[in-house]
Length: 523
Image (cartoon, rainbow, N blue to C red; front, side, top):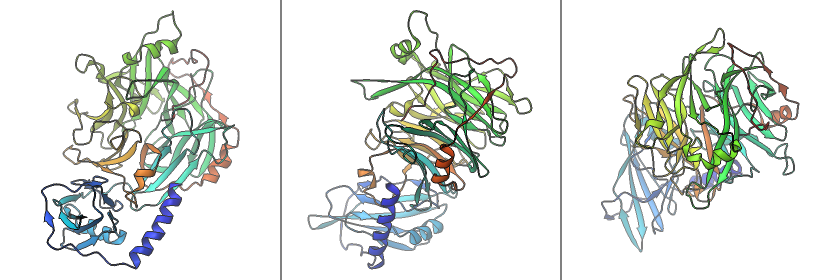
């Protein structure tokens, strides 16, 4: 739906732009010492030179808007159509190219009640570092049990082109629903990728060097199929968590929903040999969110200590004690020759933060191996619905952790990842309205400082007002996925290849406490 809309908007916008001229800057406006009220809020942000134009609109009571852009070489352009500012893509590329390492000055003028106002000028800083040209993400209605019209999309960040990688309705219906989630790539390349299909035609779809295979990662010795994935940076290996997941709902809480695991372990999948083995599966620990170091010799993950009593069902205990579940970050060394792991080592003790402790999730190591980016909230592992969830950074040299002050908001930040050059962080935030998660991008400079983030640009500044879908799990890519949705659908209709369980270095498997297969949550 969004892709079709963008095509139609592009056609209309091109027609209007082709038959119009740049507007004239108002004469003798009244100057005010206030930033212009624009949406998206792009004042004083830092961007890559290869990003799509930062179109915006004036959100006060103005009936007309004109904006003048001055590139670092002095070249000027003006735009304005009603209250919207939509920038010509070729001119935008010229501006950002001329301003690399410097800034574009923006002056905004608003017309209200027959008078023009000149707002305080602001800068758009253009970094010397580019961002990976593609990004993929899942788009889904912000519901809890339904997932019709769910898709995994990819966006060309240098323009507004968006296309579906796969849509769950291609081969499913309401009677035979299919959930798709957890897309992942090996070292930012789409030549090796995977995503899960749940319920109808279930399995894990693995695309590698043009070959497609749907596999069943659930074995008699594991509690579920693979859930949260992490490709090894160079080897045909994928680390997964396996989860027995449930959802509970609040009636008087801003968080609305809590997603908990009553069991979660870590497994390793050997793609070439179709073998599953255990990484970690302590019965008194919830191990989740694996992520490899850039050299592939260390696996980071989160784990929460939780001891069950014998008097109640596990799910009941987890629901009753959900605020007690708090995760620390650990790591294990990895031997690629034997495919075995060393003992766990504590990396970050979130449970020891302040007097009541906190919970750390989703560890992501920067491509240079220097920093660990993670989410932190008061409790739990599914922070997308937690308003207190923020992004934190751990310096792996000094082992000092800090909140990313310039990046976080008063609402939930989560599902973060790095660019391949380590200079950009992409994440989702609910800062717009606390209902829909949107994509934001922040510059991370060579001094280890994060800059003010900007919202993913859209061709029409009105887009976010009516696009009633949430984004999640943004992953940057060096190139687009070239496998067609139809090819994925054809492979999905085939039977899944059962994975074989192998025991390594004394590790033993276990099944889910109630025999159920876990499924990753919808949001």
